[in-house]
Structures are given as C-alpha cells and as structure tokens.
Amino acid sequence: MTNHFPVNRALFDEVMVPNYSPSAVIPVRGQGSRVWDQQDREFIDFAGGIAVNCLGHCHPALVGALKEQADKIWHLSNVMTNEPALRLAKKMVDNTFAEKVYFANSGAESNEAALKLARRWALEVHGPEKTQIIAFKQGFHGRTFFTVTVGGQPAYSDGFGPKPADIVHAEYNNIDSVKALISDKTCAIVMEPLQGEGGIISPTNDFVKSVRELCDQHNALLIFDEVQTGVGRTGDLYAYMGLNVTPDILTTAKALGGGFPIGAMITTTEIAKHLKIGTHGSTYGGNPLACAVAEAAFDTVNTPEVLKGVSDKAQLYIDGLNAINEKYNAFTEIRGKGLLIGAVLTDAYQGRAKEFLNAAMDEGVMTLVAGASIIRFAPSLVIPNEDIAEGLARFEKAVAKIVNA
Image 1 (tube, rainbow, N blue to C red):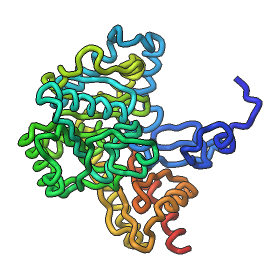
Image 2 (image 1 turned 90 degrees about the vertical axis):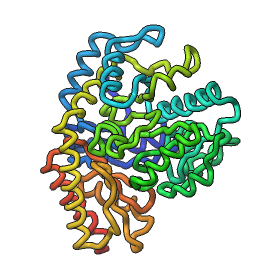
Image 3 (image 1 turned 180 degrees about the horizontal axis):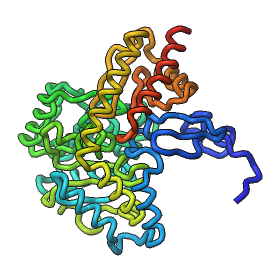
Image 4 (image 1 turned 180 degrees about the vertical axis):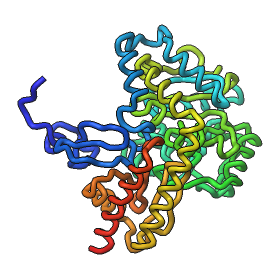
C-alpha cells in the first residue's frame, strides 16, 4: 500500500477533528517499554498509553493470542456467544467478588452500563424516587454525556446542553460531604478507588470504609470505577482488594486488553438480573478478537510474580524521583499506589506540568500529566528495571533543563 501524501503531524490538522493536540512525535513501532518514531528515535515509555499497555508493546502473549484468534473468528454479534468471551468471563468471576460480567469496548461504556444498571436496579427494587447518583469532584468516568456528567470536572461536561439529572458531587476523602448528600433517594455512589485524572489521590482507609457503610445504611449501590486502577496497576489484581472494601459493581477497561479496546462491568447475580434481555447492549462488546487478547493479558498479569513486581518497581520510581527532587526541588510530594504515580509540582512550577512532559519527550522519555500541576507515570507493569533507571535518568535531564532555565 503506497501513499501519495506525507503522513505526518501536519496531516492531523488537515484531516482530524481538532479535539486533540497530539505531539509532533509519531511512534511507529514498539517493543517492551521502548518505542521508536518515524525518524527511528527511541523513547522509553513511562506513559503506558495512559495505563493501558500493562505488558508494554508487542508482548509475545498478546501478539500470540491476537494472531491465533485472527485466523479463527473476529466478530459474530450478541445473537451468539463465543468461546473467548466465556473463558475471559469465567476467569474474571473466579478471581473477583463478581458473579456476572457484561463486556463493552471502553471504560466509558463500562461505566455507562454500571450507571444504567444502578438506576434500573433502584427503580425495580425500591421504586421511582430512588434515582440520585453521588460522585466526586475531580472524578473522571468517561466522555459519554452520562459519564462525563457523573465525572466531577464541569469543564468536560459544560457546553453540551441540559445534563442528565439527579447527579451530585461530594469531596473525595471528606466523608461529611457524602453524609450531607446521601439519603434514601440515593441509588448509587460512584468512585475511583484512587483518583487518576483528578490528581493521583488515594482514599484513606476510613473514608472508603465509611462510604461502603453509608451505601449499606441507605440501600445504595457502591460502584468502583477501576478503569485505570484495575488489572494489576496498584499491585493487586483490582484496587478494591487492597482496600478491603468490596463494591457492588466494578468497571474495568484500559489494561484489561493490554492495548486492545475492551471494557467490562462486573457485578453480583442479584444485581445483574435487572439488566434483562433488551435493556442494554453493545454491537462489539465481547467480540472474540478483543476477548482473546484480554484473556492473555489477564492471565499474564494475574500471577504472584507480576503483581508483587508492581510494588517493587514502584519503589524504584519513588526512590528515583525523590533523588531527582533532592537535587532540583521541583516536587512537593510523590504519591499514588503501585505503578500509578504522581509527582506534584511545587508552587514555583504550578500549572507547568505540560512543560515537563514536553521536556521529557525531548530527552526521550514519555510521561503523562494529571491536571496542570502533576506529572503522572503509568508504565508497563513488567517494565525492566534497567528501563526504569534509564528513563529516570532522561527525566532528570528534562527536570534540570526547566529548573535551570
């Protein structure tokens, strides 16, 4: 296939809707935790496709599963089921609190399903008055109109007309703010067990346990959005396991497919029964190609070696970032859990996280931001220790350039 036009960053501005502003760097191939661009420049990947590439790039288990399934069957429709979907669902229920699985294609779709299920459950079990959803300020749950309204960042949901109703926002880690909102009209509380986009903020143990208790007292469901924290990111298979608090519904995507688009909502049989035939669906959800890759990703991550390795590798990041900070004093704290890490910029660098990201890219290391003042790291869960060391060395050069400018 030959192109009669240059495929470069300028082409993006010509043919793509302008809702993104991508880097000038266009990666064309990856291996493990390293990628190469069109000019064959090498980058170390500390971004992981925003916590998606849990096994790095072109992991043999994922490539093998994709190639094997590609020669079998790609898509059917939900008029039929398929073997990869059934195998993956069985493994998910065997390894979590859940008994039932619904497959979608993304985190937003998984959250949409969870929210619709919660509303339907409340209507059928408790009556039409029980519709309120409590979420949290600075939360992020996707970009559909329902999920973006539940997300606690008005900048993402304003400007599209009337919003879905009966959604209110409490303050994360402030249980009094939840108590002020909750009532017997509350159908669900939706929360990330570690806020990602909102700033890499961990919940306190007391807070998350109290939220669970409030849900129980008011007959409301607890929905954990584990789109970013799920499938090993925090060092547990799912973050709820490390918090010792079990939700009623959990959503998972991103790392679930290791880079192939797939999402899932998991819950109990008793709650799941309210999504009767015809009440919800997805054309591609649970397609054999996605489920085959996700099964390989799930199996590979869900081992003691990989999960234990997450906390070991996280410590290398924390130690390395603290060492950089001792020299350059750019961060107030390094926070997060497992391999979802945030470096919070000091007052002197407030609002400049994107500058650090760009400087890091110039030095050959890919990072992320979480808001305007936090640099976020979400690398492969199996990133080699030498890649962590090399990437941090490159990141230190980027920090030095900005601090010494």
